[in-house]
Image (cartoon, rainbow, N blue to C red; front, side):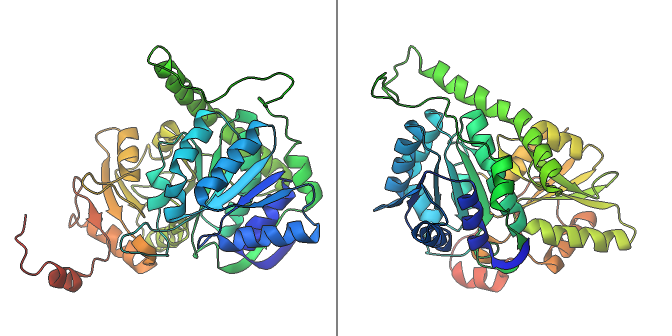
Length: 396
């Protein structure tokens, strides 16, 4: 049943329908409402047979999930921004141990300066941690991806990070369909762990590995994560068959077939991109858009196929690598033939809106050759503010 509900609470209720055995909670904006709602659901008995742990830090939250998953419990947590970085050591350990933990990341900028609003600097900073990383374009897709995340994590014995834009999706109230318990039960099977610590059959996990085997261990991480590219579309297809709506998978194309210019986005900017594409199509311009749902493992073949006919690809992302350049744009560029123009654009940092008007001007500037490939472009820069901040500095 569809209802008007805040994004965070829709996520909490969906997670509860997946029947986690352990929820490790440490609040940090903008994910706080998720763990608060889960606390209420446990207290009221709506989420039963669940151990709700109020831990002392984000590092402790992931450590508790590691311990829970290692003994065969379905484990969940949520984090954001500096909290995600604080648990980084444990995030890497969860992947290295092959533990099927699900975590919501309510994407938020990383300081300094302190900023509580949305961009993707936090999850992008942990893109090499070995987790499956899924990005939601809407609150409804975030709900649907959480259902799929538990299935993926447990089928593959890999941790899954579901990323949703902080405040933009977590705190907005909109019409969302939260799954009924019986529907969630039919889609998310009971957890049967691939490995579980047992006092009657003791083993050691996470022990030190020396040079004689460490490369092979890391090779297996790469192999298992890459293998997920074949499973994600299967789970998305099964979801569509059961719930009647499309969500998940690797990428989502909108009017991209036979498009000459394609906007590539990740997260909630997809909505604005779709509307800009409709405007451009109304002018007779062959435009399309592509939303990246699965950022890790990187779906190079799916991106290449979706963008096969494009002459210009404009990648719009809410993060970048200082001193180097684009993150998402570089992955897209590497997936495409050299003849394709890839323009890498940073937008929406620290909560600045990615507006339709800005994207429309961006496409117009690219088509008029005012913006060219090869240099990182920052959308909607305040040139006056930059002039004051750099007064007296020598230019490059």
